[in-house]
Every structure is written in C-alpha cells, then in structure tokens.
Image 1 (cartoon, chains in turn red, cyan):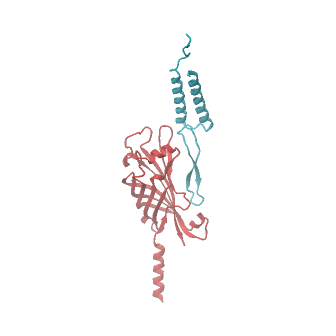
Image 2: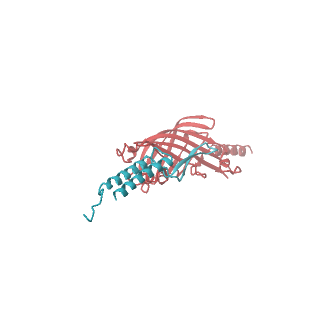
Image 3: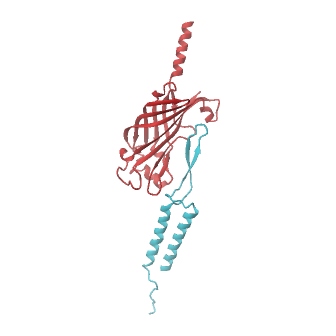
Length: 203
Length: 87
C-alpha cells in the first residue's frame, strides 16, 4: 500500500512538473507583432496579426522554455494599402516565396522571476525573408494561472495563459531586404514589438 | 480652352487643399485605413485593429498641387485669343 502511495505521489509530482504547451493562435485574435521604421514623412508603422506557434513553458524551470512563434508575411499591414502591397511584394518581403517569419526560441538566460513575471534574455533563430540569423532579445513572460476561461468568457474551462512581451531592432540589410537601397525613405533599422498571449486550456 | 484648363487647375488645387484640410490635415503619409488601439482586459496586451477611413496626407496634397501646376502649364499651349476666321 505504501509503495502504491509512493509511486502515485512520484507520478503526480512528475506530471505537475511537466512543461505545459501554450498555443499562440489566439482564440480572440488579439496576437500581433508591431513594427515601425523611420521614413521621410513619418515612421511607417504596422502590425502582423497572423501569429501562431507553440511554446513549452514550465513555471518550475523557466530556463528550459522553448518553442516557435510564427507570423505569416501576408498578414503584415500598414495604414496605406499601396504601401502594404509593396511591403508584401516581390521587391521587399516577397510573401509568396517567404510566407513565414519565424522565431525559434532555443533557450532563456539571465532568468529572474518575481511572482508571476519572469524577465530573461531569449536566444534563438530568427528567420525573415528566407534568411536565418541567431538573435538574442530581452523578454518578459507572465504566467497567468487559471485565467484562460475568464478571458474567453467561459469560466468553467480551466487553463493558463502565457503572455510574452519583448522589443528588439533588426537591420533589414542583414535579411537581404533591399540592402543599401531607398534608405532615405525606408529606414534600414526595423523596430519590432512583441506582445502575444498563448493559451493552454484544460478540459 | 486656356481658361477652361486654368479653371480646372484651380478646382483641383482648391479641392485637394480643402479635402486635405477637412479630413484632418494629416502631415504624414496618406492612409486608407486607420489604426485603432485596444487593450485586452485580462492580459493588458495592447493591440491594433484597422478602421476603413481615408485620411489624405502630405503626398496627397503635393499630388494635388502638382496636378494643378500641370494643368496650368498645359493652358499656356493654347492661344490667348483664337485667330479670327474672318480676318
């Protein structure tokens, strides 16, 4: 009897310690990356709302967080439809040929957790316009236990949320996006702001 | 014809200026959809949706001035007074 109790205890703690997979295809459609770059008249800013991906997160071992966030290139939008067409077009991001922008999270360093919030430096591989480069960026992760049901107005459904926030800057020439061209009108530096939520519903 | 082109140029110039001024006098690029900021209650994530609305910018204003200038220039290709067929 003692053995069975011990085994079930070990099993239950092992199950509790297992990382949870958070799905970043948001049921409320809120997830998006925001981007901005300087131009002649005003900064060109826009959003990419086609966010998906899975992140494996264990609050007991945040450093082992891993996963992949994908943004569809065809979802990038700015306030002017002609600019949007150019942005997605052959000369710039070439959405039909490079349909996805991907960040693959390999590891988290400098992890500091206070309550439900963790700050860390994420290291991973960033793919844009068919070019993959190693990238490190500061991230803030907030683990909201039991908040999934409340967010989708179904409190009877359990489950957690994982909010990831981060800001980083890339140089478009590093990703072969019109390198060295039109720099007076379209800044070579692109600022990217990430604020996305992943869900892990429990049936 | 000369007068007609000049009147057209004036209409384009005033129309462009008026449209730009009345629709917000936006001093950036022309927009045909406007971002609207929202905040998700549970996660506090700020996100953007787009509202279909035309906001002319400085490029629109410059295009109107350019077109008006072009029409005005074309007007000079026409004679001030057409030759009198009787003379």
